[in-house]
Amino acid sequence: MIRRAWAVARKDMLIEFRSKIALNQVIPFALAVLLTFGFALDTRDRLLAEIAPGLFWVVVLFSSLYLIARSFRVERENSAMEGLILYGVDSLAIFLGKLAALVIQMFVLEAVAAAGIVILFNPPVGSLGLLAISAVAATLAIGSIGLVYGALSSSEHSGESLLPLLVIPVLAPIVISAAKCWSDAESAGAGIYDPWLKIVAIFGAVFLAVGAAAFGPAMED
Amino acid sequence: MTSTLVRKAVGVTSLVLVAATVVMGLFVTPPDVVQGNLARLLYVHPPVAWVAYLAYGVTSIASGLYLWRPTRSLKWDRIAVASAEVGVVFTGLTLVTGSIWGRPAWGVWWTWDARLTTTAILFVLYLGYLALRRIPLSPAVRAKRSAVAALIAFIDVPIVHESVVWWRTLHQGATVATLGANTKVHGIMAWTLLLGFIAFTMVYIWMAMLRYRVETMTAELEETQLEAWEAERLAESATGDEAIGRLLDQGPEVQADQGAVRR
Image (cartoon, rainbow over all chains, first blue to last red; front, side, top):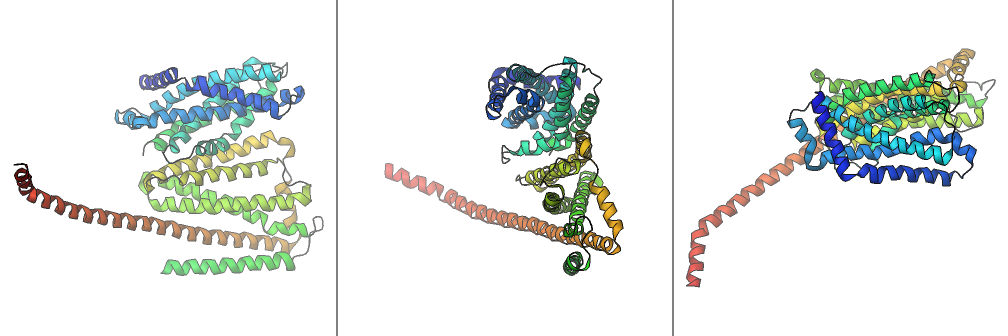
């Protein structure tokens, strides 16, 4: 199963390497949103630094929705997903493979967005470890839930805004806890024993499990 | 026939009970010592919120029963959507009545209290569920997908609630505690509140029954339309066959004629 998951992940990464949608569109989109926040909220340094944790996760969540939608658009062309199922690829392998490819793209997106925020808004960074671990947990959660809803809403007749409408409220706990982790990571004494890190890790594990369990029934019609 | 009778009985009962709640809540019960007439919202707001939770509970159970193979039936899907729609209406009412209460009591229409925030997310969550149901798909596929979405929402709600409680620890408390105190104050107020709960639960049952019937009728209509369309196509293909047959019969003659012309 690991081999099949790996094959699916490789396929998705290969599509990205050739089309460069994430690199050429989604990441620049995230940067454009960051700049817009700067304009909209005025460049009062203190304010932007204070709300940087929340802005980061809003930007990442919204940009990820494009990556998730993309992840399913490539499967719908030529009914590729049916092909995978007909080949007898286990739905869990498809889930893990697509999740791996999605998470890798999201990591790149997050790294760029985080760098953008640190440079543009200038928040203090106390603990990189806390930031990194909380980001991994939150990314897995966003990816898992996003894939399930991507499968659920996958149809020619579903509007573009259906996926965000479905995903955003479900992921509210992740946005709350991950943003809190970043807030805590700003203080100098912060470490990886932060209470919010525990919470985001638990939520991440729950959403990953829910995603893995629900992806099969959501995808197989 | 009996189902129509039951529906009518439930409808009349719920209307009578709501009317009774209005009379009791507005005219019979005394105003609250602290909140005055504002406390009369007590007979509406908590019952409405309870109905919203009840409705989502029913949706979750029905969705689970649909996904579980031994009990899989589109009946459960119809119950799920009927209940969810009424649930969304009542969640909206909960938010509105809560705001009306909150403005004079707390001085704001909205506060980021855990209960309020969870209810707001609940509202959007199930709006999403209803939007998902609007995608044109075959009934079985739609039922399965929406059942999965309903169950994820069901798992998500307690997580959202916990996270918001932790997020807003400072603002917690108050809501239910004060309600509990209020109900102990005066006997008739407690009874009116109970009446409100029963009345709005009956309204829920009535609305869900009506909605279930609409859903069943829509399915039947689609079926009939499909059958009519099929019959039409069959008839068309039959006449088409005849036309082709006629052409084939004439075939050689036509060719012969053309040959004659060419010659």
